[in-house]
Length: 377
Image 1 (spheres, one colour):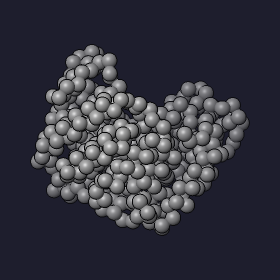
Image 2 (tube, rainbow, N blue to C red; image 1 turned 90 degrees about the vertical axis):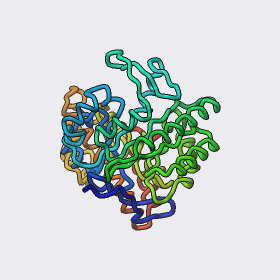
Image 3 (cartoon, rainbow, N blue to C red; image 1 turned 180 degrees about the vertical axis):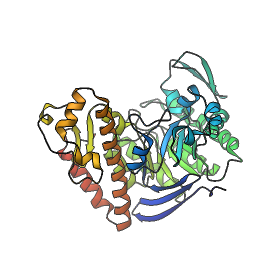
Image 4 (tube, rainbow, N blue to C red; image 1 turned 60 degrees about the vertical axis):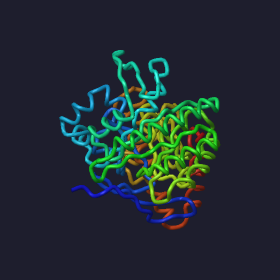
């Protein structure tokens, strides 16, 4: 029998936390960054290479896997872990963010969201109950409630309407999740846009529902970083200390460090792999744009002190060549380099929190980025 889902704190430094999540498919050290494997694959990477970067968990997506190849098919083939040959934990996003991006193709009412597939135009209905069922069929260790995510800026009455609907959907997801196997969890999602009162109301209502973890959603959707951080400052103290906190879809290394400083435990973002496919490397020196001609004759590796082999063994000149020649290997290597950097960032944060030196670590990370081609936002 699987171990029950659990979270416990190992160390704290101010509001920054280091902990451990136990799931049906293993443990997750926090703070944790989850590589995005939207369609049962982390783009341009083999599952073993994802694991070698230090990742304990990755993210899949309900919306995309519902459309192709279908949750029933994946379940018949042994579940998502078996299907994609990844035997560590998986968190699945419920699809709310993707539905937001389909504003011209969908209709939302109390019952569900109805939308046309971006693949073939076929009509689908995604209700809170169906979202939970899909994630159960996939075998996700951590499932997310279905919510309505809206872009910012938005009018307060529209933010309030979406937040209230998300709360009602959260209750339905909670009921649908009853009887889940040991080691599996359902997280609620705090909404409320950039309105402090709505954020607090959403967080308090979700805490009353007693989820196994809590996410902060609807950020990094158009608002400045200062607004995002202020919402974390408002929401994090409302959430229970004995449950994991997940900031959805975020972000830059600077975003992650600042969010950890404010008590966040989990993150996901397409940035490291997307930027890698576009020729940008993340290092402790900042972002390095390998498209720039000045790298063409540079024999140095990206970081000679990196513990991750591709970062210290391939020259900038070679990576520049691969990027300019549009070779697949360039996207593969830079995706690996970037995910390894994000995992090293998380490991460094955990070690600094345990040592009581996280603010020093935070300052050093920011200082290192001043040498890069592109500063953090």
